[in-house]
Length: 170
Image 1 (cartoon, one colour):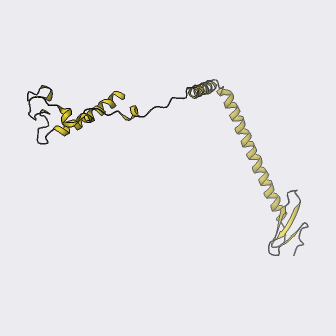
Image 2 (cartoon, rainbow, N blue to C red):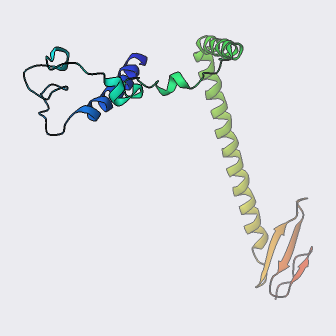
Image 3 (cartoon, rainbow, N blue to C red):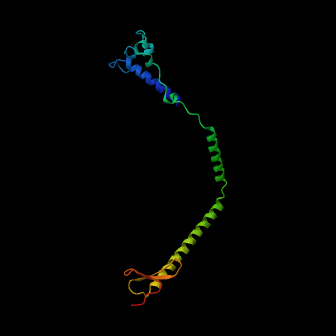
């Protein structure tokens, strides 16, 4: 959260501060002022130093985290309230659905769909049988078809002839 980010930002500044004044040859467990082990900088007896004069104020001031720098936009409370009401209405409507009635309606729609598919298959089979009957006994190269009005006509692909009357047997 914000506290952790502030600590992290302060830690980064202090980390930089320590790196500026610390001799790389010193023990990592030693004092940050004199480098001797056995005490910390807060209790160092080797004198005091004006660190701000030495490293500048910038080394000691933690930087603000990004979310504190960037201004936040004011939320649109009216939009949030409208969305909340819409969600509540949808949730209420979903809770009040009669599942038994919905199941019956779904089963009825499914049976109607299956019935329509069966009727379509029967119609297609009847058309196929009708075309086979229409083509039975036709001379070589002729095929029979039905016009949209249901009237039969005949076509010879080899000669390109189309006619309403059945072709004479060869």
